Image (spheres, helix red, strand yellow):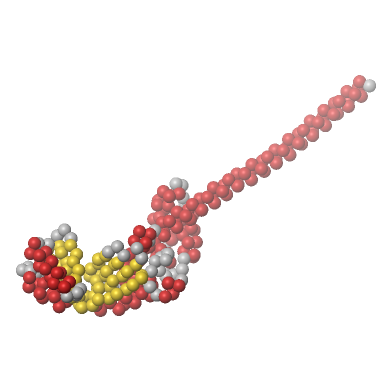
Length: 271
């Protein structure tokens, strides 16, 4: 009886050890697979987070630089070179060490999503464009004599409701006035002007006040389009909601049409 019980006991313990061993191996495999899945999940989340943050960082850098926008939209850049150039800037934003190839891929995706044309203007548009022709510009060394003569001319021209504007620097003073007053001004000042340009036109650009502090680079975007048309600007002046460009009269029509088409045309207002 004892022997039988003993054998039964022995057999039972052997079975339990075998079962326990199989159970342990099975659990190990389950735990092992589970841990692998966790590692893969964490790795995926980490890389997904990098890609999300990388995309945001690149978008912030590109959207804040009209030159980069223009280059990407018009396929002007070698993306590998651009990625190497932007890498330190993007790493500062993401606070991660990034591979150049990863940045290239992100730039490539962004470039495919961008349409050819002007930069990302948001709702920027020119509200009004006006032209004034028949002007001239004269620049003098800033002296008491020149300053007095120009102030006197300014008062006289204002009474006639004619065009005149003055721009002063530390060492020079420039007056832009109807060309009919050029000889009169020169007769008031003993020394010759440092610079004199006849046949000037002004292109007055008016825009909404919000763009002055909400649209980075909007002035650059307009000047860029004139540069692409090979238009030289003689002078530039501005107020809070106005930009006045002075250029040769021969360039006036092209400059007007370029800015009107890109920033004021009805399709932009409706689009």
